[in-house]
Length: 443
Image (tube, rainbow, N blue to C red; front, top):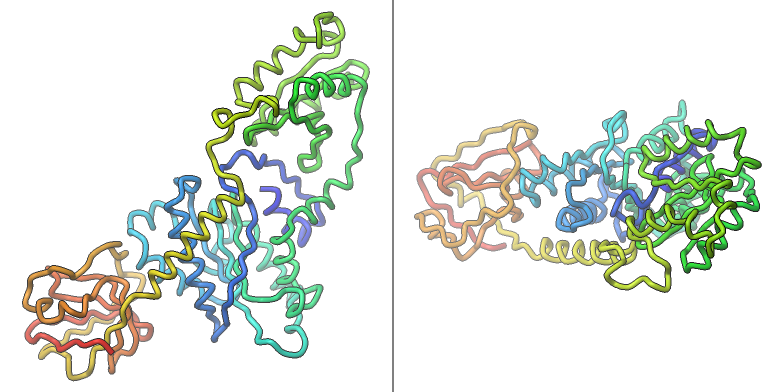
């Protein structure tokens, strides 16, 4: 989308990229979202940003506008943040959904040559309140930072989220690439206008007459519509859709017919719909308001569901929510999920609670299969879980073990006789309760 690619266009390509895609070609709105959270960087992780991104993706999967859309998460500082989000998503999402949505979490280099419909950027960095802004992050050695941000910000096809924990105006210097990205996410039209300013608006008398006819019928019309480095004579909007109208008058377009048709073919491949009006037909028409010459235009508008503003009612408007409604719905559901996740009970397994025989298998993390979304131990009538039913262990629950440290329950195996726990350190281990029932209590 133009709002997305324009940051890279300005950062690395001297505004030479021609963003041509039409924003109405996707139901996801807006194309660029700046989302600030109250997070703190510890090491190379920002857990608040990680949890927020995971909850936003889970929430988006539930929304009809995101049906079939693919998702990616890019950490702008190291790999640990991406690994943290990936771990959360594998716990919270059904493995089939995880696979079908082609979820990928990594650093910018891992996305080189790849893309997803929706990308979430985690800036990770934070700063405690104090004197002065953070150290400048501009180009970096061999343009490292510039290249990293160029790749990261150009991987999203439909929507890009910038999730950050900084006050960009007070904690980052003016030329810092992080500040530039946040500012663009907050106000994408500022950079978009730089491209539009280079093209002079021009109108012909023929275009002016067509414009008057359309406006007289109550349509919303915009002249000299900018699409990258190209211009469309006029665009009629309504119901979330747009129709491009080109006015072919011999006095104004005769020497540009071949160029105009090539441009139209290119833009049609990117989702635009066109109607062309010939000046000779228009001026020979003596019917009121040139209705005969304008009939192809009005028929196409009717077919596309674009109606005069005065005639628009609920049956004619787009079924999709507008940008604010979409964002409000998504953020509200994300907040609900975060609240649910934070209320998960934490259980403690003491060293003495180990069964007589414990099997610990250090399996590489990449070999662990995705976790089913909803398995639970409630109501299971086995000796093991009859003894611990009051603790209500379930997938996603955090546990603490004296020997292995903090971990998270990711699955139950072998008719619920085995509990799979993914520990934060030492890879993924299996604790197999085979002979004795552990005495598990809440901390």
